[in-house]
Image 1 (cartoon, rainbow, N blue to C red):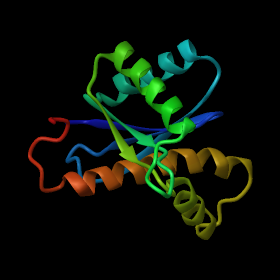
Image 2 (image 1 turned 90 degrees about the vertical axis):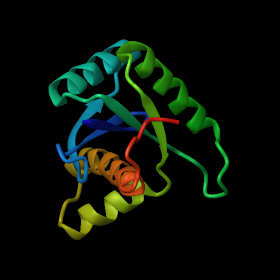
Image 3 (image 1 turned 180 degrees about the vertical axis):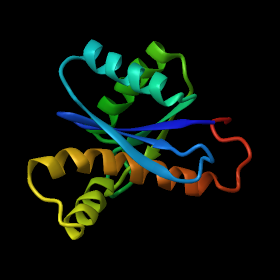
Length: 144
Protein backbone atom coordinates (compact mmCIF):
# COMPACT_ATOMS: atom_id res chain seq x y z
CA UNK A 1 0.00 0.00 0.00
CA UNK A 2 1.45 3.38 -0.98
CA UNK A 3 1.14 5.88 1.89
CA UNK A 4 1.40 9.66 1.69
CA UNK A 5 2.20 11.75 4.76
CA UNK A 6 1.30 15.37 5.49
CA UNK A 7 2.91 17.78 7.94
CA UNK A 8 0.25 20.49 8.08
CA UNK A 9 1.41 23.97 9.02
CA UNK A 10 -0.11 27.41 8.78
CA UNK A 11 2.00 28.44 5.76
CA UNK A 12 3.12 25.16 4.23
CA UNK A 13 2.20 21.49 4.08
CA UNK A 14 5.14 19.13 3.93
CA UNK A 15 4.53 15.96 1.93
CA UNK A 16 6.34 12.64 2.06
CA UNK A 17 5.64 9.19 0.63
CA UNK A 18 6.58 5.66 1.58
CA UNK A 19 8.66 3.70 -0.89
CA UNK A 20 7.06 0.82 -2.77
CA UNK A 21 8.13 -1.66 -0.08
CA UNK A 22 6.48 0.58 2.57
CA UNK A 23 9.67 0.66 4.61
CA UNK A 24 11.26 4.04 3.98
CA UNK A 25 9.71 7.50 4.00
CA UNK A 26 10.91 9.97 1.38
CA UNK A 27 10.26 13.72 1.31
CA UNK A 28 8.35 14.63 -1.85
CA UNK A 29 7.11 18.22 -1.92
CA UNK A 30 5.91 21.26 -0.06
CA UNK A 31 2.52 22.81 -0.72
CA UNK A 32 2.43 26.54 -0.09
CA UNK A 33 -0.87 27.23 1.69
CA UNK A 34 -3.29 29.54 -0.10
CA UNK A 35 -6.89 28.61 0.52
CA UNK A 36 -8.54 25.36 1.45
CA UNK A 37 -9.74 24.39 -2.02
CA UNK A 38 -6.34 25.08 -3.60
CA UNK A 39 -4.58 23.18 -0.80
CA UNK A 40 -6.88 20.18 -1.30
CA UNK A 41 -6.38 20.32 -5.09
CA UNK A 42 -2.60 20.24 -4.61
CA UNK A 43 -2.81 17.31 -2.20
CA UNK A 44 -5.19 15.45 -4.54
CA UNK A 45 -2.66 15.88 -7.38
CA UNK A 46 0.16 14.53 -5.21
CA UNK A 47 -1.95 11.58 -4.08
CA UNK A 48 -2.67 10.76 -7.72
CA UNK A 49 0.94 11.27 -8.87
CA UNK A 50 2.28 9.08 -6.07
CA UNK A 51 -0.46 6.46 -6.34
CA UNK A 52 -1.23 6.83 -2.64
CA UNK A 53 -3.93 4.65 -1.13
CA UNK A 54 -3.82 6.12 2.39
CA UNK A 55 -2.72 9.29 4.17
CA UNK A 56 -0.92 9.74 7.49
CA UNK A 57 -1.26 13.22 8.96
CA UNK A 58 1.08 14.47 11.65
CA UNK A 59 -0.91 15.48 14.72
CA UNK A 60 0.67 18.20 16.87
CA UNK A 61 0.23 16.71 20.32
CA UNK A 62 1.58 18.84 23.17
CA UNK A 63 4.52 17.57 25.20
CA UNK A 64 2.04 16.79 28.00
CA UNK A 65 0.11 14.54 25.60
CA UNK A 66 -2.96 16.74 25.22
CA UNK A 67 -4.57 17.97 22.01
CA UNK A 68 -4.44 21.74 21.80
CA UNK A 69 -6.03 24.18 19.37
CA UNK A 70 -3.54 23.45 16.55
CA UNK A 71 -4.30 19.73 16.80
CA UNK A 72 -7.99 20.53 16.35
CA UNK A 73 -7.16 22.62 13.27
CA UNK A 74 -5.12 19.73 11.84
CA UNK A 75 -7.91 17.24 12.54
CA UNK A 76 -10.44 19.49 10.80
CA UNK A 77 -8.09 19.74 7.81
CA UNK A 78 -7.67 15.97 7.86
CA UNK A 79 -11.43 15.56 7.71
CA UNK A 80 -11.50 17.82 4.64
CA UNK A 81 -8.77 15.68 3.03
CA UNK A 82 -10.70 12.51 3.87
CA UNK A 83 -13.95 13.90 2.47
CA UNK A 84 -12.25 15.09 -0.71
CA UNK A 85 -10.12 12.03 -1.44
CA UNK A 86 -12.19 9.20 0.04
CA UNK A 87 -8.99 7.63 1.37
CA UNK A 88 -8.25 6.25 4.82
CA UNK A 89 -6.66 8.88 7.06
CA UNK A 90 -4.62 8.13 10.14
CA UNK A 91 -3.18 10.68 12.55
CA UNK A 92 0.29 10.15 13.98
CA UNK A 93 2.11 11.98 16.75
CA UNK A 94 4.39 14.58 15.22
CA UNK A 95 5.92 15.94 18.42
CA UNK A 96 9.27 17.54 17.68
CA UNK A 97 9.36 16.34 14.05
CA UNK A 98 10.02 19.87 12.76
CA UNK A 99 12.77 20.35 15.33
CA UNK A 100 14.37 17.05 14.28
CA UNK A 101 14.01 17.94 10.59
CA UNK A 102 15.67 21.33 11.19
CA UNK A 103 18.50 19.67 13.11
CA UNK A 104 19.12 17.17 10.30
CA UNK A 105 19.05 19.84 7.60
CA UNK A 106 21.35 22.15 9.56
CA UNK A 107 23.88 19.39 10.09
CA UNK A 108 23.73 18.71 6.34
CA UNK A 109 24.51 22.39 5.67
CA UNK A 110 21.03 23.54 4.59
CA UNK A 111 20.08 27.00 5.89
CA UNK A 112 17.83 29.93 4.98
CA UNK A 113 14.48 30.09 3.17
CA UNK A 114 15.04 27.03 1.01
CA UNK A 115 15.81 25.05 4.15
CA UNK A 116 12.44 26.05 5.64
CA UNK A 117 10.61 24.49 2.71
CA UNK A 118 12.80 21.39 2.86
CA UNK A 119 12.18 21.22 6.60
CA UNK A 120 8.44 20.78 6.09
CA UNK A 121 8.87 17.89 3.65
CA UNK A 122 11.55 16.38 5.91
CA UNK A 123 9.20 16.67 8.91
CA UNK A 124 6.50 14.82 6.94
CA UNK A 125 9.08 12.11 6.19
CA UNK A 126 10.03 11.86 9.88
CA UNK A 127 6.37 11.47 10.87
CA UNK A 128 5.81 8.84 8.20
CA UNK A 129 9.00 6.95 9.09
CA UNK A 130 7.89 6.84 12.71
CA UNK A 131 4.52 5.48 11.59
CA UNK A 132 6.13 2.89 9.30
CA UNK A 133 8.52 1.75 12.03
CA UNK A 134 5.61 1.32 14.45
CA UNK A 135 3.63 -0.64 11.85
CA UNK A 136 6.53 -2.87 10.81
CA UNK A 137 5.12 -5.85 12.70
CA UNK A 138 1.52 -5.18 11.69
CA UNK A 139 0.11 -6.90 8.62
CA UNK A 140 -2.76 -4.45 8.22
CA UNK A 141 -2.06 -0.77 8.85
CA UNK A 142 -5.11 1.49 8.59
CA UNK A 143 -7.43 -1.13 10.06
CA UNK A 144 -8.74 -0.31 13.51
